Image (cartoon, rainbow, N blue to C red; front, side):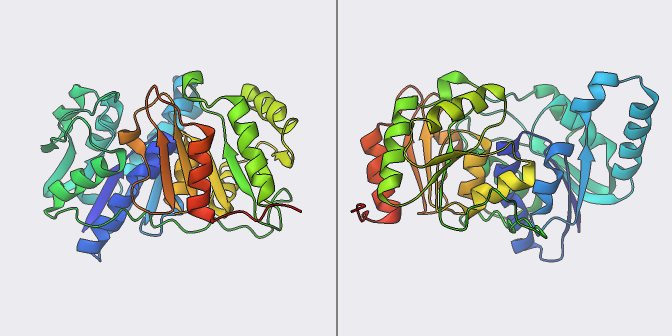
Length: 332
């Protein structure tokens, strides 16, 4: 059986889509699974050992120069590549018009299926027009978890039940030479930055938690993704007892950073979800986004705190740290 998954973005959503691969292979061990994804996340999807081919999609970049000859050439190559195979089933788990169009581009065998979402979940960017490309539309509860959503679509399309914990099948990223910034001792990863300011946790909270890390002899490493986050990271590190601001990390180095952390603490953002997908000891902080949508609920190594409009407190995080790492031996 040949299967194509269309889930092009964003970082956290691509990660949360991965368990459907393990589910499919559990029920159809010989299935060959390909995946269409935005070019920025190609190497991330390649870490999933159940995916055969990753097909890059560059609509974000193409839109900037839609009529340029080089862009038209790339778009033509994408069209040829997605039509190279005939698929038994094509899944669109994003539910947008653009992903429906990609689904329709792919060739399917006689009586093959194009399966997608019949409706969106609360707060999602679902576009009902995507259903015109389906042969089967799968309804989900409006409060379906981001991980479960894709799993349910695959299960409905292939005729099985979802009855196991989520398995992300993520391999460790490979480096011939490890990055120079990577410590040779355990560290805590703080993921403080996120696109929406209301989802951030108060700076003084991060500073207080850094002192708890110092008691455990864990240096704090701070990642960032844009200039504003970089400035925020530098301001935090200046007030922390043992903290370092990382350089701007390429995608695979950022994945390595999350995957190697002795403890990851982060707001509702992609790298926090990557740490949780690797089952690292992770504390997810929800300040202004609904916890039900993305909380790590597949491992006892993950503790979720706060909720939309009710940020967690420092004592909440302290209790979670003790639960995950045990009691600290205070520095003498």
